[in-house]
Image (cartoon, rainbow, N blue to C red):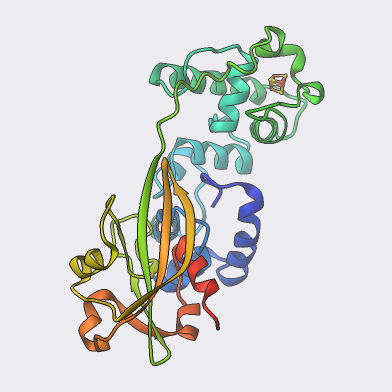
Length: 318
Ligand code: SF4
């Protein structure tokens, strides 16, 4: 849950998950609809599918006990070097290094590393540095959990004190050792180079209602937000006529169409405007099967929606 997501966002999801699926067995047995519903709004849905695959793997290969060996943890679906390192060091106090955005910021600043951390050679150097630090911590005979505490400290320092802009250097416990602070180069380090240019995209979504039912569809496997539900939508090209685009995309011409709301959101470098229209379709529901399913408002509440579409659903009167 914490991959790419802040702790404060994760906490309510974690609590709900642990109430519903408190064991590895329960996670392995859950149906896809309830898994996605528990994850709804957290994003990066591949994580929840991998989590269930990992639960299966733990049952098959480790008798249902979470493995403690680094290589076994790394072999679980959805687990990379960072997650395996965080798990093994924090939970089992093993000398495994970690490197995420927060730790990169702390290490590049403290050690005055001015090369771009997105470059492979710099990343390699930073992993080596993180490994040296955790191995050094592991040799401390006076500390009960040195690897766990070192890695948690690095993550927390990056998250709470060594912020990207205006870091709290006055309160920083490693200020004495910090090259960037000493050299007045905090604004230049980490040197992330030029940011990828953002691209704006314009989508149209339709809220079609007939006899108390609303038209929705499920996203297919293998795409972003796979298996989540959404209102029928498509990308509108620059200067395209809306009615003609609807006819071309779905082969139907709505009897009427009214602006409903606009939802703005971002996915990676894309700034997306989703313009939503309420549409009256004269087409009988049977003929709109290729567009999705007609469900009641109450049925929609049971489904997991992509975040932007969840906002549309929230605006529809109950
Ligand atoms: S002194 Fe400032 S820049 Fe250096 S690690 Fe601490 S908070 Fe970050």
